[in-house]
Image 1 (spheres, rainbow, N blue to C red):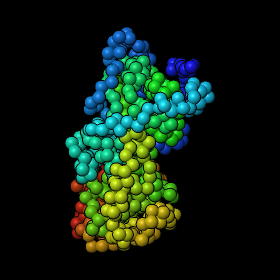
Image 2: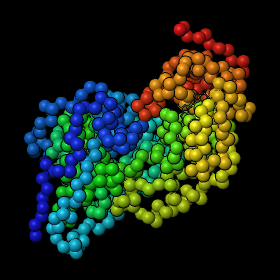
Image 3: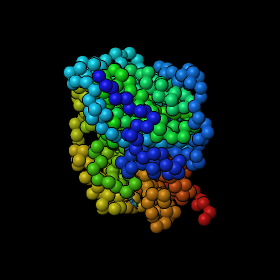
Image 4: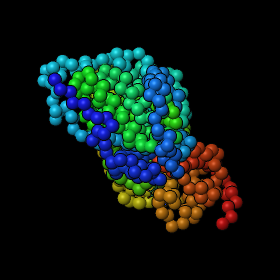
Length: 510
Ligand SMILES: C[S@@+](CC[C@H](N)C(=O)[O-])C[C@H]1O[C@@H](n2cnc3c(N)ncnc32)[C@H](O)[C@@H]1O
């Protein structure tokens, strides 16, 4: 029997080598991966290089072995994407596929290989596990509240997400129900490292074949914060090699790599001296609900839209208006909330590919979710946009979701639109200079403020903007400003309580 040992130092399955130290977030990635990064849970890139080549030199082997041992236990430094993340080094490196070496060079008969294939081991996820639920920056507390409402115990909001310890089925439920989360990660190891070899050793000790079968494809993504390693691509490669080598030891064959749509996405998170390995239970980010079929100008991420509705304290009985609805993301999220539709009902998840997956329990969760949906009906949810193409886009998206009958849409100017009810809530993200060109933003914001005062007394308005000009020119006093991130854009969600006879504040000097 000949076992083909692939040299993990020089495996041919690397994508492009790491290029420059990324001045623009994700700009080094293929378009698809850049899209995946947009508004995702991954940290922002640093402005200046932080990796130092000289620090990447390896420590003594015995020391590294000691430091590199994986520890089960709560991570101390989860993947972050909070405001501090602007200082973080965030890079996604996925390894490009080569096909299975074992397939090209069979090392033993199929039967023998089948016999040695690890059997599904449900115990891999029996008992409480540690999870990190990544969410939009600025919405961590709201995400923690949402997870608690979903029955998650002992949630702890951190930067860029929420930690909890619980049963694996709770993680499935969060994937199915969370409107705010981006992804759910199951921690499988945490420890210290100095160099890539430490990472390799730590990953190779892990029982990967207990967690997923050989036939599943993998991809490793590395996200780092102040990581001293020269190449995160190489770190991903070492983890991939460790997983493959572990499989090969046990089965004589190794899993394939699929950089684009892996069955089992693996995430490595590095800080200055610690690593954490996760199985990504989600796959495609949770904000991809699958209903937004027609693109709009500067669309919001679905989970940010849902978070705005929660921060606004909107409940389904309150009239809701988005007077600058674009592709209708806020309206769609509101309808899903009002009808209690689980946002994950239409899609598949990476956890379905793991040995811990329990088809029966999952079917039960889905069935319950379907049973909890409310009847479709006309709701006091209203939207308008000055651009007829946007009205059409919203209609198309709502129709694709089967929810068009629930909302009232029209083409209208937000500077003149009438209130559709005596009291209610406006949730919207007006155009702003950074993303959309508007002839005269100051005049626009002033006109918007004037219309709110004239026609919306008794309403509360929640406007998301990255443009400080809005606060200056709208002529209303914000009662709350909540920092939020719309992708890389730092924004504020301004709360305006509109009362009748509200006086214009003196305009900021030009
Ligand atoms: C930032 S986009 C909204 C995106 C939307 N939230 C989404 O997720 O698709 C701003 C929208 O305001 C609309 N708009 C600009 N000026 C307007 C006006 N005077 N009245 C109504 N809508 C306007 C634009 O056509 C654009 O669709």
